[in-house]
Length: 69
Image (cartoon, rainbow, N blue to C red; front, side, top):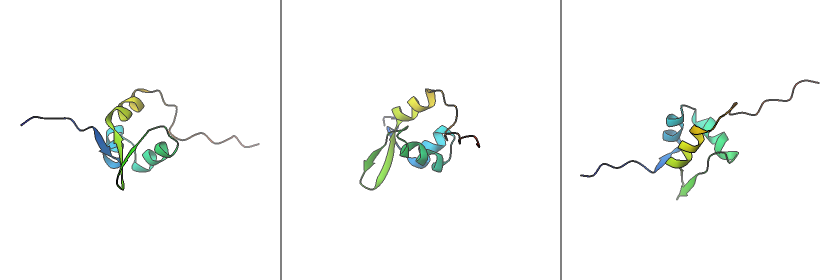
């Protein structure tokens, strides 16, 4: 039997691979920082998208709030 690597991951699996919460992953997906693919009702993340995101520099996932005036 041939061993193969997964190509598409569920949001939960992708979040675990990136060591972030599923909610943080949802935020990244909503802001188009991580592309997804839909298969029926399922939202899946491509392995390459996870690796590209992991290799980028990130100051923070959330944008900082404006300082008080």
